Structure formats: structure tokens, C-alpha cells
Length: 490
Image (cartoon, rainbow, N blue to C red; front, side, top):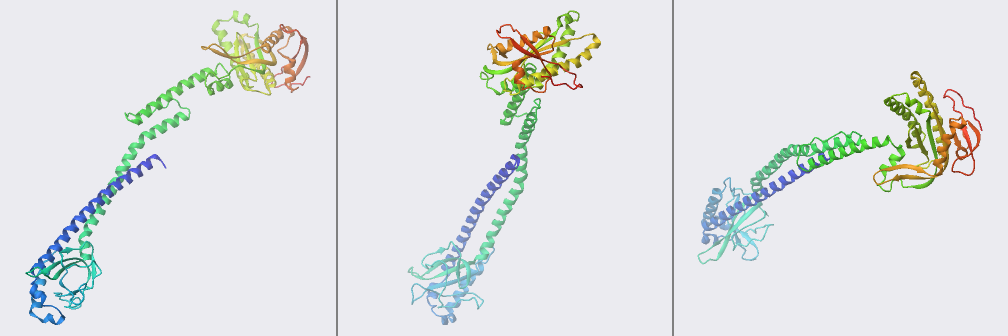
């Protein structure tokens, strides 16, 4: 789920919950206030009716045959007047009658006077009053909290005592309002509450949508810029004019992009001086631990242009630099293509190593392939330069053996290189190509390391190498043009 949807749901839920809580609280308070006010009215009506009831007349009503007495008729008239006077919109008293304590069972109540007109609903004097609600204490003026059910229906009930001159309780007047009518009066409050909640929901959704869009818009811009940067476009920037946290993040992303741009520029420049293997090793290291010196077996290749000094004497310096750059462009590509590492340029020559910084079990074969391809690329280049009267040849020397390989130099400038006798011998072999008339000269160590691969080797005998007591058996390789089929010579 996207942040925008989460934000929309969270804001909508918060707005809805807050409105529901406020509306619910208001409904509860309004309902309680209205309900209590209505209960107070019913109690007041019951007390008024009890005050208007003649206790002497009420005490004369005992049994059903007393309903024919003048006292009963007078009480019916009195209660009916009070009842009818309070059948208003704000009260709607449905029933009003009197109760008397049963002379036989003090815990029971009997109906005294009931002014009800409908015979089926009328209670008669002396009948036991049956109620499922709270126990009525006729000595107290009370309005009940909950609805009660009796033989006449479901009502909200209030009662007040009828006392004689001495204060003795003769009976009580009951005032009742139907429960469904009372609930009906409270129903508009519930409808208003739900209506308010619905309006809040309708209003909160677009507001939450607007807020979520506003909150997610900076994130979308940040995501787009980060995706562009992740895809390699380090020129991407976050255009976000904001002073909040999003603005701070945007500045950090732009700073990161600028840093990556500089890093990519440095990496591109660095890649022009070292092989990809060395570059990856340096970039993946944590500084001082990168490319530490170690002793390992490598194959070293030296190449040099023969007679280049004479060529450079008759050409302008700019032309010499142009020719060298074009030449080295091809030679370095050959070295890299064959898993080699460019060590350095030495004037018009170069030094490459195979088997470092990563171990290479096929380093001898890769070095020999690089030497052959260098001669082949030179042949193509000569065809181009022949029009300008420029003809060059190169000599390549290769030797395999142990050497110390790593970053050597000072804290201000380091150079990844190899040192040791193996390097010196490879350099001597390159120099010997002139004397022995070979274009590629390799030592027996490289020869045996190549495992007799499909190379046109030629045994050139032994030579003495300065710095070594034992003579060294060397081999040459006759390089054929790519379209020619080379013959295997051992």
C-alpha cells in the first residue's frame, strides 16, 4: 500500500473517529439533558395531580362497587382534567391513576381510581397492580430512570404521595408516558447525530484526500529523482521549494547526486589509468586496506615501439602525441580484453601484468593472446598510417614468475605495480627481440605455464639475461594475419 493511500486512510479515519466521538458525546449530553428535563416534567405533573387529589375522597375508595360513589366520580374528573391538560406535545401523559396500599398485604398495591375511557384498558378499584419495573414506594415522590412495564403497557413512570392533613399517606398518583413516544421524542437527536456524522464523513474524505496529496507530492518528487539517480542519471535534482523536513531531504538528495556526479567523473578519469579490476578493488575497499602488497605468481608483458625516436624527430610534437594516443588506445584495450592490468606507460612502451590484482589460473595464455592481438591491431593501424609514410614495429617480451604486487608510493600518490626479478626478465626479453629478430619473445616459464596451448611457438634457444646466472630458454611466436590459419609449432 502506498504512503498516499495510508495517509488518506489515516486522515479519513482520524477525522471520522474525531467527529464520531464529538457527535456521540454531544448526542449523549443532549439526550441526557432532554431525558432528565422530561422526567422532571412528569414528576411535576404527578406531584401536581397528587396535590389536587382529595385524600378524604381517595380514602373512601376500597373496592370495585365504590366506583359508583360520588367520591370516585369526583376523583375521576379531577385526574382526567390533569391528564388531558398534560397531553401536550412536550409531555403527552397517556395514563394517570391512583394506587393504594393493600390492607391485606402491605407489600402489594391496589388500583384506586382510573379515569381511562377505554373499558379494555381501564383498571378497577381493588385490583392488584402488576408491574415488572422497580418497586413503588408510594410515600416518596419519584420519577424512575428506566422504562417500566405493567398490565397497561410500557411506560416512563412518576408517582407522588397523597397525604391527609396529618401527613399520613393515603395513596399515590401515577403519571405515565408511553415509552415509544418518549423514544420518539429522542429520535430526532439520534437522527441529527447520524446526519452530522454523515456530513463530517462527506467533508472529511475530500479534505483527507487533499491533505494526503499535498503530503505525498514531495515524496513523489523525491522518489522520481532517486529513481533517476539509481538509474545512473546523476544530473537529476529534486526541485522542491520547502523549508520543512521534505526540503531538508531534498537538499540531501541533491547533495548526494552532486557527490555521485563527482565520484563518477573521478571514476571515469581513474579508469583511464588503471584496469577495471584495479578500479573495482580500490572503490570497494575502505582506503588503506586496498591493494596491499603481496607475493604471487604473475605474467609480465613489456612492449616497445622500435625506432620511434627517429619517427618523432621528423614529426611535430602534436602529431607525435596524436599517434601515441591512437596506438595506446588499441593496445590498452587489448590488455583489458585479455584480463590484464595496465601497470604503466614507459615513453612509447607499456608494461602490463596478468594474474593481479585477481588471481588468474590462465594468466600465461591471456598474456600470449594479448601479445598476438597487439601485433594484429598494429598491422591494422599500419595500413591507416601508411598513407602518411609512417611504419612502425613493436617488440613484446613476456616472463612468468613470482613478484611483489601492490600499491607502492607515498601517502600523496600511490601506484599499483609489480616489482622483482620477474619484471626485470620480462623487460630484458622485450629488449632481446631486436637482437633475435622476433616480434614476441617469451621465457620457458611462460611457455610451460601456457600448457602447450594452440600457439605457434618456436624454440629460440637459450640467452643470457643480465642479473641471472643461469641461461634462459626462450620461445617466439610467429604472428599471422587474422585471415590466415596459424600453424601449431612446438
